[in-house]
Image (cartoon, rainbow, N blue to C red; front, top):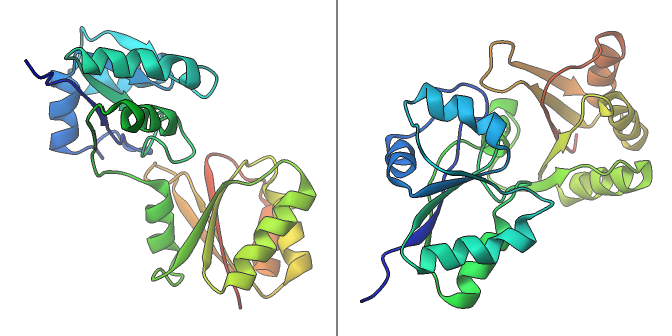
Length: 226
């Protein structure tokens, strides 16, 4: 008898707990177990939507390579396993990639549900051109690599999108200002949450703002050539 098990990548809200699809809730409620980037972080989301009694398995960047074969083997044996990250789409700067690769290698079916993504939300909210864009993930802690990534984004002529720590944002804006003070810049902060903000302007203008208003929260940085 052919197994009916599968892995399902389920996007979760990036801030507002109400931003989850009916299909995502259906999968989470029907799953045999849920693989979470951080079980402590995911528990409140599941409780908010009345999902309880499900075995939760930690799946994060430090154990994904080791745990992926076990999860895929369980799916091959007939389990439905939902995979969620702390926020947004699994696999986008979050665990999920290695699980998908393992599914492909051994022929176990998997599904990817549509849902919240900070990348797309920030892109549309920035007001920058969105017909072509580059997502660079988290910017490096090394200033030289950050400069190279920002320069490449501006040289491409497309909208560049990056995740950045609030502790490095001013430093990164200083680098961007050094490349091109007139570069179109947007800092999207705390998306979908109570204190969501978009700061738009030239690199010089946005830098000046955050030099006097220390940033907090989760940040998406967008750049576009002037």
